[in-house]
Structures are given as structure tokens and as C-alpha cells.
Length: 161
Image 1 (cartoon, rainbow, N blue to C red):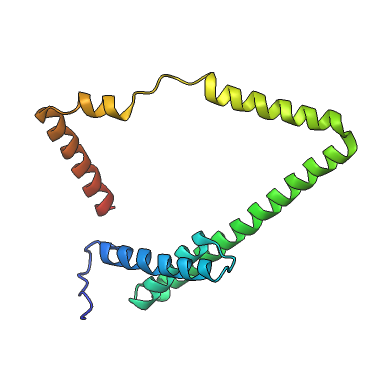
Image 2: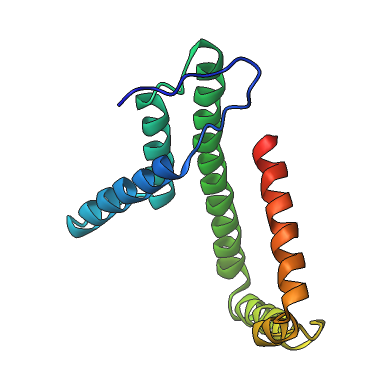
């Protein structure tokens, strides 16, 4: 396999479909293997590290991008630790409130949970158009051509950036 020659000034797409397919297969194999061995793992972390490894293996890392990639890895990992600390603190606060308040706080928490469930599921939602209605309304040739054209234009704009 020969590396693709890069032309100066031409935009280089760092992530192509072949690498994406390989990342998906390798990640799923690793996750399935670890799960069958009953090992605790983060599927997000496994997928993220497979992507970093594949970009390292195909030479996408160089002196300029290595610092950004490593700082990105550290930012993701530190975000996980921050999320874990926030979850721990919230759990400690709720547990403390339940121990101090007893049944009154437990009933109050249940009431808040029921109100938020009812509010999010029954009130304040606009009537959304179903997928079937959207497809049924857009099946004529002109709307299909317009949607395809808009989608292609958006994809090209994204690829050029």
C-alpha cells in the first residue's frame, strides 16, 4: 500500500471511509471481547483510543499535530474525571439530604421526579410532525431533487472546510 501524495495547498481529509470502517470493526471486536471476558470498560474510551491509534498508524501524526492530538486525549480523559466528580458530589448531596431529612425529603424527591416526568412528557411539547408525514409530503420529484441538491451542497461545504 502506497501513501497518497499530498499536494501543497490542497485540503487533506484526515478521516476517510476506509479508516472509519476499520475503526468500527476493531472497536466492536475489542468491546465484544472485553465484554465476553466480563471486563469493565468504557465503550467511548475504547472507540476513541482506536481512532487515535489508527491515525497514529497511518502517519496522520506529525510534529505539528501531535501536541493537539495529545492535548485532545487529555481533555477528553479529564472531562470524564470531572463528570465522575460531579456525579459523586451530586450523589453525596442527595444521600446526605435523605439521611438528614428522612421520609419528608424522600417524598419531596419523588414528587419532584413525578412532576418533571409529567411535565416533560405531557406538557410544553409542540406537536411534532411524524417521519411518515415528512416522507409522504416530500415524495414528489421536485422536492426530492431539491433535498438531494441541498444535501450535496452541505456535504461539499463541510468537506472543503
